[in-house]
Image (cartoon, rainbow, N blue to C red; front, side, top):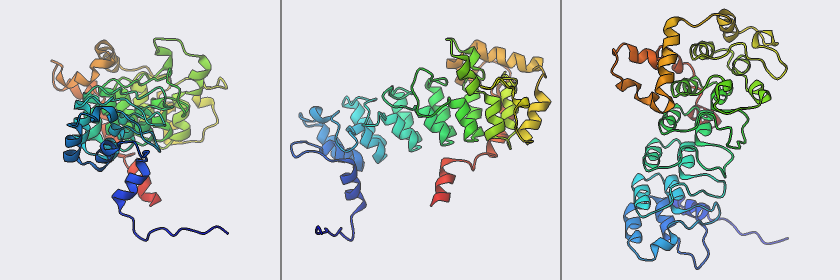
Length: 329
């Protein structure tokens, strides 16, 4: 039987993290990587002043093929991130999983770092080498603040040209995980309620598979606010599924969402609601975040932003990533 090597009784957390995240060869100069990971902005600034630092600025080290900027995001120090970007670090350089620094910041819910990266020009949709996007991850985790921020910087709400490992699209994801706060931010941010409104053709089978009303009755049946906001946003409550069946004819049990769907199916939007959709359409998705600055009566701003649904975001607030983690621990 082979001899076993006993592990040390105590391993400092910082040393453990360095060994876990940075594994360079003997000839590699990984000082930039270690300083970035440890959040040592003073040491990093000194290292970046050396002539040889440029050679290692975008060098990716094992085991995750992480460049210094990706490690700085893990370390959580905004000053280190600014220093690396000022020195010329590639802002969207991926790790072995195709995760950009912004993707990592989003998955770790680091809003301040997300803001720095987005303001400095990070791609809000991440990398095509990844099989997911920052927005999809934010929606999955119920990270509504991240959703709002990504949309402000132009994240694609219908990333059908981006191969994803998770079937669906952000709007449907928010329903599958019952995150109304994310659904709310997506609608306010200009997400299309109907895929038939896309500027490019998409297969009818895909549209049927991603039917929003069917998803609500299956995954968010206790939350009728999904139905009401979807209707106010111009959603098609009679969308058929892959079997060619509209939601009210499908075999869904009675629920608050189904009651809301029955009461609204066939009911046209009010003239007031139609005017809201018309104004928002004229603004275009890129300008929706500027609604609070419009030169219109202040009483219209909340209405244009669907603020009447804001109170419902509290209902699903516990259904967040932090709450899930608490239960697991």
